[in-house]
Image (cartoon, rainbow, N blue to C red; front, side, top):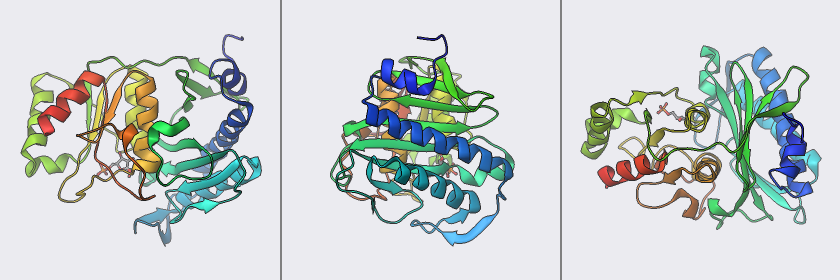
Length: 305
Ligand code: P6P
């Protein structure tokens, strides 16, 4: 295979993805290319509408969601999908092989400050999503829109990183990303909760005592990519008074990242159990998350328990 194969060839040869799964991922990659173009020219203002969580939507949330929906529909391979920007499961076909869950533009409130933002995707076999667990995903991937446009995917055979080149092709950058057991960096979400959450205060104190380095951007895709790219780190977003079940969603944020992190040798917990084992009961289900280097995740869970 070429030194820097195209995404499609790599999906078949190294990712060992079935042809139809490869094609769904290639459609998602095409949507990512259109979204990164839209980021450069679309107004970052508010759309005047709210999503299912009552959160203000920026125009780019809507634009990104429309781009992804168009590509999923045109693929003819998607039975149903769940988008953070839609309040119900959207059914397309009862016979198509896969279903897709996604957050079209995670961190969209950061576009106006020119921080990196991303799209997150999880892929399941069949039409049903409610009742499934993230460990039943057959693939997960994200597209990270920063100074470079990167795509990281896993179809069960390693986690692999691609970069969008100047002819509009995703080519391999690094294969088989690995996360070591110990962390040097920490990404502390919901940090304000240390004021009334002693265990989380103790976690923060342990990180400072161990002279670990903070790396937090406010976009989960960028902060999780930091761990996969550096090969170490921990990201936490525990529950707190403002978010009693945690802020981040199981279906289209924590589930796909748990799949990627575990396949890179890391871990993802809700504080008491694996995110990969959490049953999807509702599309807008939230969960606390501690994710990254395995031993650091264990240490944080012990301190939080
Ligand atoms: P906070 C972005 O809005 C997001 O959903 C994730 O991308 C990010 O990790 C988190 O929320 C940031 O939350 O409370 O730090 O603004």
